[in-house]
Length: 339
Ligand code: ADP
Ligand code: TRP
Image 1: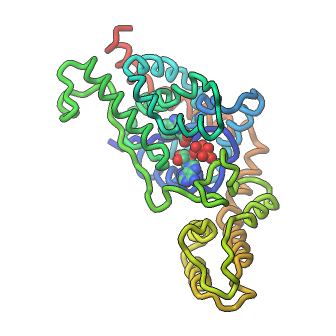
Image 2: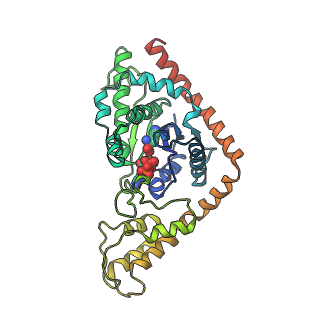
């Protein structure tokens, strides 16, 4: 049977190069390798988006971005998390096997609370990994491609699925899960290491919460400005430039096609002509590379924004398919716990 691949992206802001190279590019490739399901995590987004109109708009824009970047609804299922009501039920039931101590050591929760200086964090943010585990387990996923920052969440999902199976399935053996099948299938994690963390303009991980992004679909002028503000050091234009801890270098490597990057790399390492080898020149190359890489996607994005009915149809049929995948799982769960 084809592998079932599942992943989600929160609709909590504009998408950026980190989301593309760290996640979406891989999703698009994987749609040819198995039965792929991708969803817009709009319940998760409610932990940070507190305005209904904005939440709705970002959900729509995230769907449009997926489609513009190459997700093909004929091959993969694209849906909104909130269109599958079964998720709420699984979230609750799963919560009855989740040790609080696990949630207390969740990196993402600690990071978010510390970075934003939240004094009295809400339950929704604390329980976020439980909802994410429910997302994964509800569709019998085999493979869950995510960025490195999400690995711990995946490990939680596997641990809680195992706990649940051990509690409710007589004879379930976590060493030999094939012998007596569990209620939940254990998914495997898949991260791509070479691009696991895309650096932002300041060299930290690119993230909308650090305000250091290069956006995928912002107006070109704005993207150009973002690229111009990528942090560089004070190496003079005619000197060889260091390649370590240089977000500009790393971004060039991701965005430029192989032969163009080979030329840029040579110029970067040799120094030489001060007119062509200063950081300004390389920023120009990056902007050009960005336009080449995302020109078609940007045009498609603008087109789809004008056709919300078409996007809505795609999401509705995606939700129907997703619910069909969820139905047998939720039946097993209800049966196992006595509902
Ligand atoms: P942000 O950090 O901007 O809030 P999200 O947490 O919404 O981004 O991430 C959405 C997806 O994109 C996740 O799968 C995440 O792993 C991936 N991702 C986000 N930023 C990066 C990055 N800088 N490098 C690699 N992957 C990233
Ligand atoms: N937490 C993920 C992120 O911030 C989004 C997400 C929610 C997800 N549910 C998921 C990813 C299930 C993979 C599988 O990027």
